[in-house]
Length: 376
Ligand SMILES: *Cc1c(COP(=O)(O)O)cnc(C)c1O
Image (cartoon, rainbow, N blue to C red; front, side):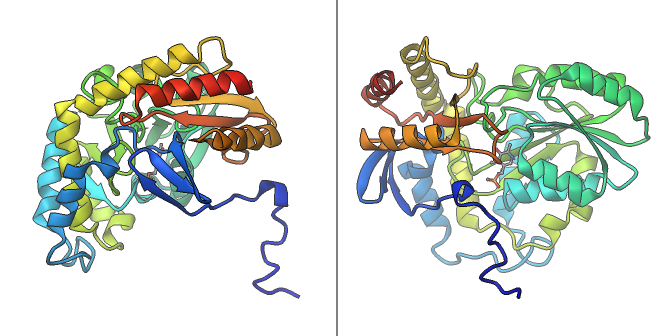
């Protein structure tokens, strides 16, 4: 007999994901009654708890909290347009479209760009939202091994079609390594395709000015390039944005279902993101994040960390049980670090994913790396 109590009975206990209620204050997180230093957040610049960002959000919602409707109907607040213009100028694109979240951005973007005649070429480690967006579009999907651009080129030679799109994360969320977006654009040029780069983790954290991978590789604003970013990570808020040419963004305004059929972002989030952008441009937190990253990397030298120069620092430990045990042991020592297991990452690559934050103190980082030395 089928009912709602046994519908999901096949999920094995060992693979259950655990949701733990937790309260954050700065880089401290209270979990199960203990206060831990949080090394498991994507709030890389500490802006989600920054007083100026919090005040901007509060100030924006004194008279209204919800936006009341889709942007298409009556939810299109002028603040959205102002921030879109600022983001486009900062990132070096003609136009920008703000959307509910990174998940919604990618679902809607690929659905709008592609149909069953389109071929999508995707890095195997792309974020789930890009995988699902491609599925939703009905496009023919070709996945290449992580960062294997020779395989990508072979696939592009093999599958000719009028409309083709290369899709890649910028900074990869679970590995912390980076796509060579310059090489991807060269391939896109050679094979006449679009290139979608989702730099959710790179924007605000990568490069001396925080403008992310497409700025470092000087490909931002190119006619073939479409870039996705989120406010949920370095910006410390919620929401997302898509960058591209004027015509592309206008096309998305017409076609992007995840924007048209969803309530517009609350202005509090927009105000928070706008203040976060000013802080990112000022650069104080970014410089601190880079200093913290250098300190961490020096402290874990010789340990088996994955090669990553970003704020995402994963340590592969193999079995799920070992990842959980190490995460528990770190918690006993006062540190909150996420154990990431399959199916989020490939089988046999369970890992501890450390993320650094501008608000971590040197002393907190040193204590963590000392503790790790003892545990390993
Ligand atoms: C987090 C993330 C998203 C989703 O963004 P949200 O704003 O959290 O929905 C999309 N793409 C990548 C690469 C991400 O890391």
